[in-house]
Image (cartoon, rainbow, N blue to C red; front, side):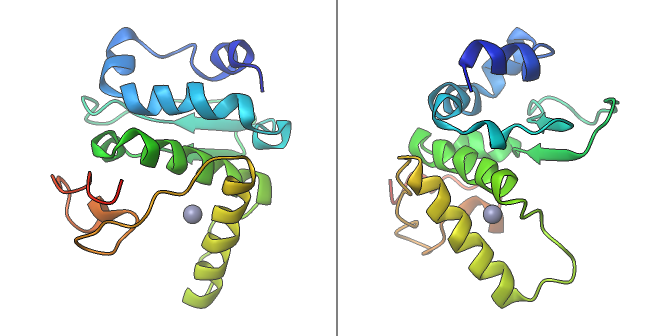
Length: 152
Ligand SMILES: [Zn+2]
């Protein structure tokens, strides 16, 4: 998708504060969006990347069908990791693989691997796992985690 189309459709409501506090996510959008197929942006899609300053929020959207969420703590990751998180989540959109409560752990693991492969097929390299904890998403287990730069 063209960046200007993406900006108009999804980022119209972003304030300068949002851009400051989600600067890596915003930068990842700039890098990744032009590489993504149109199927990554179906109608009824909402991108939710709340600022770290928001305590909570309510919003409504006509014909809302799917939400892609980017957690504030990814701002602590190195840029290459944020890029891959963004590509990975849009790969879920393209694959239609929103998580289902009935999935087994094995199904989930396979779905995540196939989703990573699709993201990599768009030319976005998957960064190695954290050298200390072996996790790809190390902040998950204990945010805030200052060690997420490891493994870049
Ligand atoms: Zn995933």
